[in-house]
Image (cartoon, rainbow, N blue to C red; front, side, top):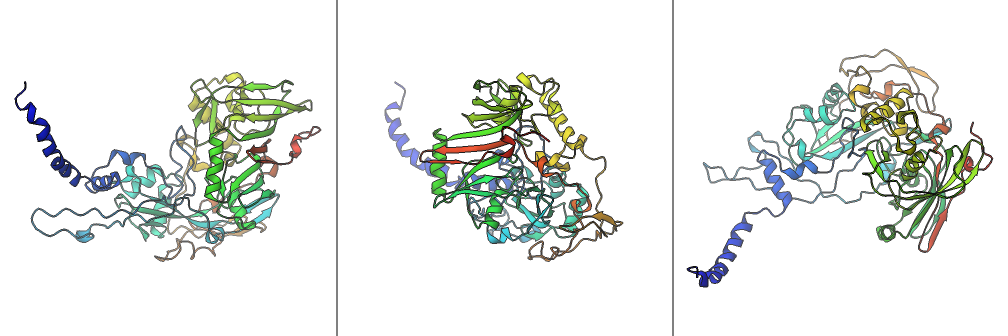
Length: 538
């Protein structure tokens, strides 16, 4: 027998408690604390690279390829209060170094914020609507994009971050914005973009927002009780703030015009899709119905108008769908995609196009639209799945004679040539360098632009002089207060552009959520005009 084997258990029992105290005494109270210590020591924890992105500007320079979602307006993420990491005692003295001494910038701990931030009257009062040419428009307004420093930014300069990740504007814009006091770090104006970022730094960027117009069609209330609100969503309007949309969204219109606030979306519809949309009034109701969704207890029915004569008999499509680009929302049929199933039944045929009833049995992105394209009957005005970018067959049978990158590039180029990037929830700053305009504007503090023709809300064409001298913002004052009375923002490129408004019919896609039902409830909306048997395309 091994010497000492008989006494080993007793010795181990004696040593383990001491060893356990020794190990855990030096361990941070949480992994988060460990990350803070590592960042303050000058290197980055691996976990920091995967933190959720915020959006202090409009980070449009990132790849349009897989895995990225649009990053528009976001509230600062909810973060737990962290106790400050104690500074280590210097080797040559017995006293600890106090925070902020020695010229070192002090970073306050993150603020405790509510998860699931709701919108208040202050948010709704940021701007107002006006109606023109069959469109609902939003008057331009000032807004703060906010985010905490992401892990991959720690140790990098603001200049590096803005030049590599926030390329919606040229670097000259951010330099001018810093000089004007519109860029803030930990709620203090930052003039020097060479400042090095630290973990928990809080970034703010005041921008002049121009939202794309949507149709003037009203949001109709289909039902309301103590638990839910059900509406008939018009086409062209997003459900909630995203990308360039904030006030021109269902959530904001319901809050501002119907006093329906703190609603919880129970499901989503694409921006161009109209029809039945449900909201819960409380988190408890939301959780209950989402549980029913997870248990496949809910049924959705859609109606659409497609090209050609759809088969008279019921058609079931089970082709798997793969996401090509989350940024654009581009998908295609692919064996490596996720399984899904849709049942189609033709309702009518007018000699050119067919009205089709659709029952998605799964809930993949753009499932109905992709399956109809695969079957050779795309929605007749689908701006993504019925375009020349897919090749001569337009994706029928999954035949796409190009790579994913080529497909995405061709789709973006097609919409850029038509000046219809808004339909994809994109704008020039989103495009890869090869597709952008050849020259970026330069923002100079002493530059005086010649007069240019612009058009303001509900105003005839007029000539306005553009003064690009930047306006200084007072620290601690709301960023837009000193600028809100200006018709033209000196740093806003959108203010200097004259865009042609889309026609209302160009913002409508012929896909409509007809019915939504589950245990104990069923809601439906009227058939849209384009789904009538005798409808003819203009």
